[in-house]
Length: 429
Image 1 (cartoon, rainbow, N blue to C red):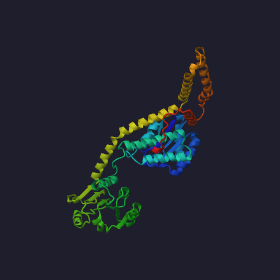
Image 2: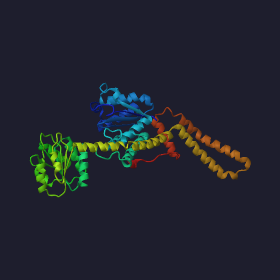
Image 3: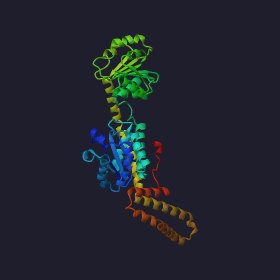
Image 4: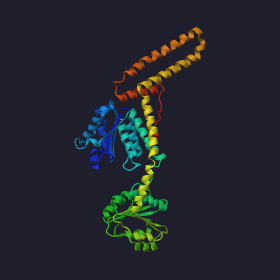
């Protein structure tokens, strides 16, 4: 298989190196036509915070590796600043296996990452729009999409929170069995608080209140997540109507004491439980709060344990995902092999011979016994003469680019009904 993949990822390079080879959407669109001019074949390029990968269908895979490396470095003007050993190379079936592992999330920094499949699809769609994805890349990335979709529907590789902020919201959902009718207060507007607020928004929290020592930051976050900002010296006034408190601020003392919550319980507007999550360092909430009735307090230790358990569960799904990858990889290899010259010639010859023998058998009784051998010989010669020129032309086409050869084989198989495994994966996209 003539596929080559060259790239950089969190497996091979630190962030400061990876970011030098990060391509914006516009840079990808500009680079793809240049890749075709340089490599003379099909190409797909995609870039995320953790990886940049260039796939090409090469005439000579071994000879294409160095030009592909230099192409990536030249497009970003970083030749000489990115160590060559930090670029990885995969060829043939190994390159396909790598793409499928990426699309399924088992090659991600966060095991089971659900975002990477969308990023791979965007990279492929950009190549389609730029005209650099032909027959092979279309088939390859449609199958990659199928692998990613099957990994998420047939296994639990993407289930369970694997970040503290997401774990906090998942825990709240467990307590309340849904968040649409609940009110949450987020104390803080830093990165962790922002991620938590976004997760709450994604789970359709009924009402979201945000507070921070710097009101402008609280207001900006609230507007971003469809919430309401309140001044830091007034947030306790809103507690009687709150079901969930998630605190993530840098403080030298607790922002909420057990005595505060005890008084709050007497004036709360609901009989439901009060759910508090402390994800601050140092801790923001008085641990003695746990001793109060109808109040649930969880801290980073609890959330980190949840994350560890979920990662372990995801890891147990890897063999199932690898089995899916193996199935789809086999399908691609068989499809690719069917487009090579000899299998196509064999299939075409077999089809012609089947038609000849069936038609002759249908009419053989019309011939006298002495003419039957002659009819067999004459019809075979006719078929051989019909096939002679197409077979010669197919065998003499090795000088053509590999993408063009595959396209010709595909067209012949489609024209004569010889295609195998041509499932359309558009529905999986």
